View 1 (cartoon, rainbow, N blue to C red):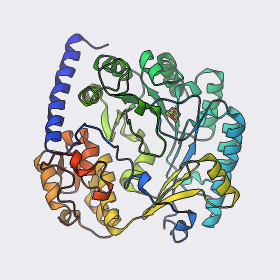
View 2: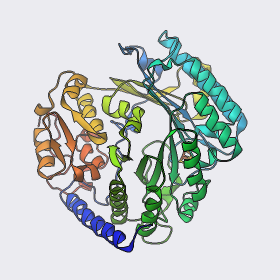
View 3: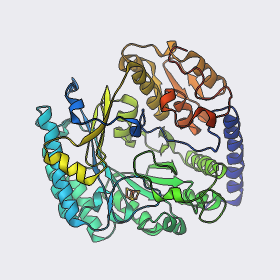
Length: 480
Ligand code: SF4
């Protein structure tokens, strides 16, 4: 619980923060209705051209033989309203068994293509869907087969994303033990809210008490635990969101992630959330101002309770437990391979994504092909932009690393006018060794970083932004 005075102060600060955001919108940084596109990858995955697995033929395996691994397991109990991922819902036990068989075959196709016996990851992420929606026996079978294809000697974090209901109850205990036995170290639990009305509107298959029980269960098993929440969903108000965050920061785990609701999909599948309208009705999507105020309130509450932002949107009391997988992908930009339906691979010079369609995924593997359907190889210019956008969004651009990863470019010579405008308006700062977002810049990180996207990959058309000094289309050549 928080006191009335604390609450009033948080709301006052959130109003002040929103005034600053509104000013940035007037200066051209934020689009006309305040909508946003999260910078998760650059360029956005939906903009990759159609390409088959042969695009990997000239790929050169990393000299240090390390490659992080992502595995996608797309099964859920029911469909959350805000979810844009391809998946299957319900028990579908036969389909799960079939899918796991294909997933293992896909790993073998990949290993055979590069003449490898196993993969040596620095970190692993099993996501979805909810990997723990597999039946215990199937989960154990999958992890046993997975382990045979992985050399764990340099793996310093093994993550699993899951939902609360998949780990409570007797089945849940068995699954926790299976994860533990297979060396999983860190769990991200998607709580999304601790308000039962909001959870119902999200169509989540659990209530607040189950969500809390799942956190204690995961901690009992000794996992590092990260919990996730969505802000800006229908049913969320400034008051009930503040209550949820007040409960969240009192839970005994060390890391909290908050996500802004994404109404329009940034992948191929559109969730049902986009049928809702924005407005002030009980079931409407909260407007831009209320959404930004929720973000401000959550951040201030977490900071006041000893949480610091370690990666963007991730607030932690313990620096050591941040997601190495996310850091390796977005900041260090090490090579990572993704397996499974819609699995995303991110290599030094190229990206690819697997089919989103179950039948296509199976039939490509039956034909002995990796199920890659879209891929992208960087031009030099896009490589430079990517080495700016993702590290700046998630942490900071270390100048020496940028020079190495970009093929010898000095960032001090690039985007001089754009960097000057962002610096002048208090959004980025140059420490000499690195370039990073300021406190205000962090708050609108996606919009600041998207200033460095090429025109072709800007999230919104030029006319959606005010014609001001922070319009992202200004001075957008790399040597401007
Ligand atoms: S949000 Fe997660 S749990 Fe919900 S349907 Fe999507 S993948 Fe499944």
